[in-house]
Structures are given as structure tokens and as C-alpha cells.
Image: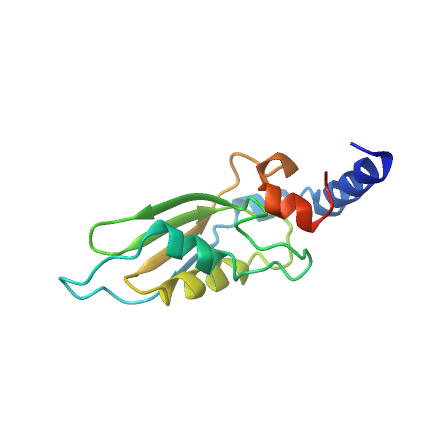
Length: 141
């Protein structure tokens, strides 16, 4: 890593490190969509990931998937989709709206039923969770 890349990474981490115990106690959950009609083909994970890539934290020019904020995607046989995600910091100013944006984006995927998004804090997010694409978007190589 170059000195410039190291400095950029340090600045990014500093901007995201907000210690807010109250925020850790707040449960952020969002729901969207409607039950999938029986017999319809359920959404595949690739389509869900593409939908996730359309959602951005307004403070960071990287989508939630490539940022590494999506921890778990569970697509059930009835088309319902459960997503666990995190935020870069407990005091993130978009904590109340970002999960709903994720749920809304995934709910329009063909074959998606009910979509539930839950924010989790463990494991804590780090830059290591970012995809190579996300790192490239922030010049973190």
C-alpha cells in the first residue's frame, strides 16, 4: 500500500468510527414487498445482489453490497427474503433510512416475496469486508 492509500483508509475509518452506545441498543428493521403467489419462480441471489448494488450510503460513494455492509442473504422457498446488514458506525446518520432503502430495492426483484432487513452490529464492520470493486471505487489499493 502507498502512503496515500494508507492515509485515505485511515481517514475513511476515522470518519466512520462513532462510539454511540445508545445506537447499538436501537433495533433497525425494515420490511417491504408482499407474499409471492404460489407457483411463481423465486428470486435468485444474483438478482438480489444486483438490487443491493443500487443502494448507496449518501456519505460514501460505494453501494451497500460492495461496501461489505450485507452480512447475510436468505431466500426462502416461498420467495421471502431475509437480509442481515450492518452500518459503518453505530451513530450512522442514515441508520433509520438505509435498511428501508435496501428492503425497497430488493422487493422489486422479480420473484421476491416479503423482504425483511435487520441491522446487526456483530461482527463489527471493517474495511476488510469490502469487495475488490468497493476498494477500487475508493482507491484503496
